[in-house]
Length: 159
Image 1 (cartoon, one colour):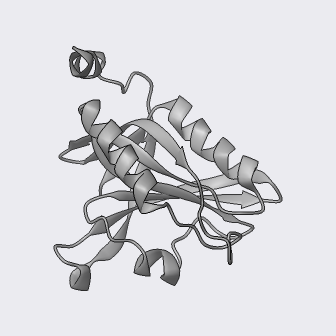
Image 2: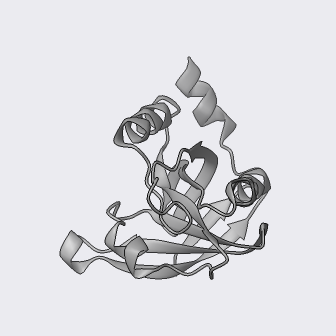
């Protein structure tokens, strides 16, 4: 089983974003570095939900914003580790729509249930597979750990 490792500040940021946007879904990207057992997340980047038709149960990050996020990740020596969004008044479990719209193989998809405006459970699912046709979500453990940021790597990205 894969493990998604998050600093406490990132974990809280994801959950707070879900509460701020309630009753609509929040969304954002996770930046980090890959390890053999999963992603080591170092930063969450909140994004705007561009869905206007059903923002209470769908999300979309604009392609332009996604390109900007990816460029920033590269500049910092990281990659897009995955994405997060909230499920207002629904379980922290992926939906058929979440699966159909998940295309970043090898990334984590974090879902936080927000019940009556308060974050409850946060789960993560790793998108396995080699192609779009054989992709599948596998539950991964979420580990909250202090000192996950690799200061020397980020420092070298600025030099």
